[in-house]
Length: 563
Image (tube, rainbow, N blue to C red; front, side, top):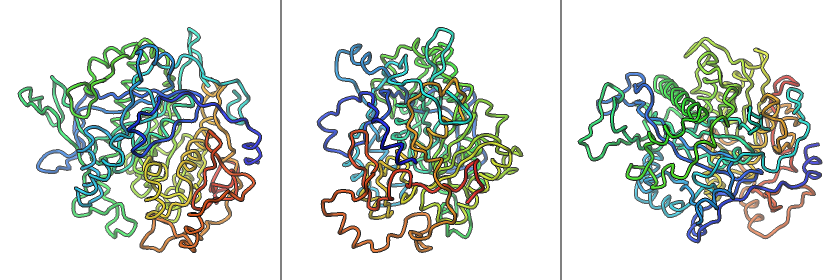
């Protein structure tokens, strides 16, 4: 059914993307977004309302978890033509590797616990000038680009954008939380794809010691966390936050770690992450209330500050943002440890009344608090869990994630759980796009990396089309491949289950050498139907899974019992 739907559906025309510079062709590239909108992006770092620390965990005799500022990128639907006319020159773009790029590369080398020089050099040599295919500081779109009203396939919403009192569109909001070693740009493909479909996506960069490296700019005046004050005499008025390894238990992420997860550290990090989401939501409230100039004046990502571009927030007309955000039913979405954060935010409904539903991408469920560990509230809001096949073969993690799905079901909220065939843990991050050969060789990823992204985005859009209110979904042009209507799985397949020592980190590929040798030769797909990109190019992976619509396993949906 899904295959027929895709065959008969006209190919959408994507919104224009900024042109690539010559040097971008020399480095690894990110694909252009496929939705009807062009995508804009801006970077904001502002002081928090109440600087504070979380837990008594310390490193180097200082609090390890300090909240002084909140940093995030906003991906949003933009008016590309207005952006170009206003500047009269080529639009600028944001680099994928956060600034300062060389020092960020060193942070990744430290996170991977590998020799610093070769890893730093390799990352810099391959992604130093990789840029997001989005317009920096572009004008927010004012109308629905290319969308035509159509009936929704959802039984819960019959009719994308809600109109405010002046007849202008308001855009739904998604908060995105990255996983361990991540940053505000590490999942930019997913964030940009959602923005190209009409969402405001706030991609946070957590400063809780879960990222590889992040730079915190201190406010010029005011108090800091742990009762510290800004030192205006210090020429380097910033500090960096590197990944925090659990003390005496550095491999708490491993399925084979007999000591398990460092609960004290991970729960404290989730607590800080939730506070960062609250601060980001407050910033959006200010933007929606017409106080964008206040945000601009207090923005710390400006010329001269570490990690900043000289462009800052220049050129943005903040009046465009007034009254344009649909804030009362936002979505929380996260990958890996961000998935654990997502589950806890959805659970704490009293603290986050504006969060209406959650999307969990390959969650580190073993680090996710159970009911009663951080709050006694249960999961009572719609939930979509999208797992990789590699994590599906991690029994403890898969069972615990299934427990959260059952908890959601028992409350009466709709929930779905699917697995993308042939995918591994990083398949939902930009690393899979930028380093596909390494993913295939070392992680044994079999699905085409771009196809895995589109399966993630399209299933998310299908979910949101079902659970968001009709005033938000009306007239949208979101892709619907029927992924959440896939035939349910009877039992977990074991064909690609790895040996125990590789559990969660990779898959097993039977007859791998012969399969790779066959794929080195030019070939055409033998299947009558194969997924394609927006230009019609087949998205062929190491292994192709029959046809579109047969590329995921459905474990649970509101229509049947779990499998």
